[in-house]
Structure formats: structure tokens, C-alpha cells
Image: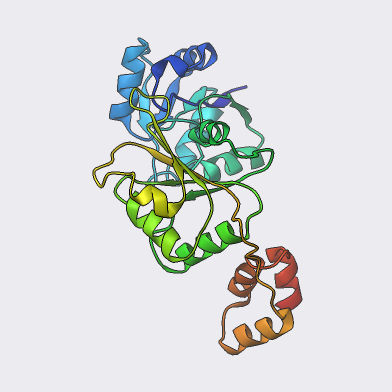
Length: 270
């Protein structure tokens, strides 16, 4: 039976690739990757000649049938991202969901992840944590992101771009986030840099011209920011404003201990 392999690649230091990943990339029939040019540099470095095909945000859904057809033909396939473990803030979730539903053999090989690397260097209690992906740039998503930070009792890991880092720190400061932050730049690379402090203090330590991959670990807020609200009254107000019931449930779940599904069950027939 053919197999689909999820293969993590180094987040910076090429020595971090595992022998198991190298053997897999050499043995499969095709490797799907985000950027064929970047992937070719990696493959050439390790003298791997397996054919490459693109798989990125924009064509990922269109590639599902192509990948499934190859598996039907008993071809083994590997998926890699530009760096780190595939599917983590990268395309692939819908593909894997489809393959799982149809019973294909899937193997995920453990390996590099900036999320785990940043957590272990943070110095925070990390027996539990939440990962929120990239910090939203604007709108409701940005507000909801901040609510999750304020209400979290466990560390949060997130990503941002070097061009947006100072803007995000300014936003955190403006909104009163008092958490300790650990900003990891260029993890595992020659110029790896770790910054520690609050949003206010870090703004003065970080250059406007900062470059490289950025991973942020946010400690739980020192304040008790959980919002105490009259749930029935809040539901009534949102219904009066004609907020869709599924969106209503998602919004209230952010500021309560009630799941989205339980809230939706409560309001769906109102």
C-alpha cells in the first residue's frame, strides 16, 4: 500500500534534518513542497534527486485529487514545507483530513518546529500552551486574538513578520498587555537572537530594520482579565444586533469557559 509522509525540514540549521527524513525523501516517488526553488536547494544539498511538485496556499485544494490519484497508483509521496513541520501555519490540513477519511496510510515523522523550540527556551511553565498562528493584521480577528491572550492562563506561541513586529508590540502596549514576552529571531541559525521583556520595554530594544523569522512566546497575563458578564443579557444584545448565531457563539466562547458548540446549542432555536 502506498504511503503519504509528512516530513519536517530544518528551520535554519541544515544539520537538524534527521536521517529518517533524508531516507524518506530519497525513497518516495515525489515530494510536494511550498516553493520548488527553496526545496531544490535543500534537496541538492543532500544529493536527493526525487521529483518536486508545488503545493502552496492557492493551489492546495486543487492538488488533492492529483495526490490521491498518485497514491492510488501505489506511489509514495512526501510533503515538506519551506521550514519546520508541515501543516503548522502551512497548507495541508484539508489534504490530510481527506486522506484520513479515505483510509490512506499516513506517516508523520517528528522533527524541527519553531513553536516547540521557542517554548523550551522561554523559561515559562510549558506543560500546557496554546498556539495561535500569525498575529492578525486588523479587524475582528485581531481583537479576538488579543482577547485570547488576555484570558489565557497558559503561555501562547504566535508568529509575526519582522516588518510588523514593532507594530504588534505597540498594539500590545496600547491595549495594556502586561505579559512577559520572549521574542525569538532566526532560531537555530547563525544570528539567532532572543529578546525578553514586556511589549513596552522590547520596543526600545528592537531595531526597525530587524530581519528574519520571528516567533513570539507570551506568558499568561499578570492581571485577571477574564470578563465577568451576564450571559443571557449578552446573548439578547447580540441577537438584537442580528449577529449570526454561529458567530455569536464563537464570540462569547472567547470570554467565557463555554465551548462554541455548547453556546450554539443554547442559542440556535432562539
